[in-house]
Length: 431
Image (tube, rainbow, N blue to C red; front, top):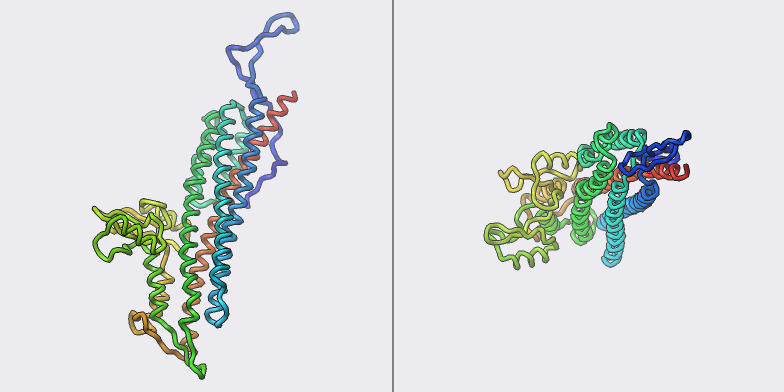
């Protein structure tokens, strides 16, 4: 992890005095009068810098709390699925629905609280940076060069989406180091970019992971029913699997997290009916979309953007960044507009295996009897696809955690620079 030690700060450099029309005069040793350059009062600047440093530290703390909450939520869902699968194949006791509800509620409450605090601290940090900009404090050339170099180092190995989000900060820091923009402009641009990175970079990951966790929770719920769909004969040499019921559950999950129309089967319905259907399916209001003069309910599998569509290049960029579990899809077909959706490939492979067992798409009451070897073969294939889904959850959760860490390290670089500036202002006051 990129880190920075505040103990290695640059030696304080006294700000350069600035000429003003209101420069005072003083007598020199020979009795003559000389103009004394007026200097921007370091007192107010020191106060603004100190406030910004405190706000940066508070934001860094909330960043770490968000990361812990995200990792905790993803870890819980992975462990829960493992317990549910183990109980399904061994006939053990499933975790109670009430305990799961309580645990998930606690996990989500912790995450929501951490994100709310992070959002508040971002706003306060940005406000304090604007205060630094207004204070007219002047950084030394060494401080500007150091800031630009550390930002370049931080984002050197970052993903293209991260570097794109950080481009305004990287550009402004380099511009300030080369004397192309003023300190006032630098701090104002940094403040605006912090908000943009939080919403346009971290925000995408938060939406993606939130959607995938909801998807994985619904898949995990299917595992709780597995024990009821598997039975053995008295001899223990034959296993009967209710392939029809399992297929129906997977098909419903596939449709819920696809992007096609779920309701009605054809045509459109009123907005009220569409909203009620979405509520019945457990889908958000965003899944109610207008088509012509009526409304339809569409699947909830879009990971990016949160609303609307993006270009193919934008979709491909995020698919590359997110890795497994996400694919680009043109929506609607032929429109040239795209969304990033959940990769339902593992679900499709599970359903294909059930089709093979049943000799076609199984009816809801279809059951298939297998010997133990055949059952173990099917079970291994199903488990492999379940592992793919779980690995995707863990990967996306880790990517969100990494993105949050990158954002936190950005804040730490800025905090270190601000601390250096604060020491400079203090040394000026102390003479």
